[in-house]
Image (cartoon, rainbow, N blue to C red; front, side, top):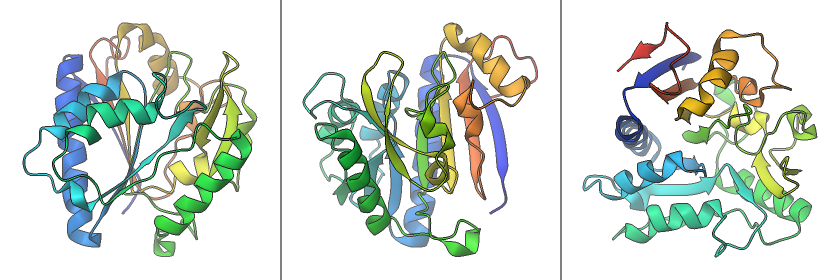
Length: 252
């Protein structure tokens, strides 16, 4: 698999959710056919919720072959309303008659540094690498789902954060601009994936998206620019409101 970057624009947020569902389902089907399982890291935030609800309604998906992780989490208990795990649980997992073979949530209720180390160990144990892809011994997810904040952050990789400089650790503790502790995947783990899908919705993100896709490369300011696959496919799926300031995007 060679590196491939695709930017697609959906007319509305609802269309974005349907297209994202189709892309995830296709990735799952391919991964299950080739490797027996679909190893996916889910994202939090408001945009993925509709995607998860649509996936839960897919009558053809073999969720028993899914192995589910999270790309970031707030340091809160799994029952907290802010929990990324809880959002995916209520929108997707609780609706499935045949749940995934493995659901590995980030332990947000634990001490952040210890929780990050524990999750990294779990990822290394459960997600196999593929040295032939040029990613060494780094675990290689079939798909990592991400979003982009209005400040250009992705996962819990925030502008100016020390986590942006991490070159060896796969999961670290970090802090949001609000002061809230977080757990997050780092670039080495994200960029080793087979596929990354970044969802962006809303007019309030249009200026940032233009700067990210058309402006200077500065991941310290716009951390999502640091998502650069080692050998995989990166798809940006944005709605028309988010893509309003960019004229040369491919529309679907």
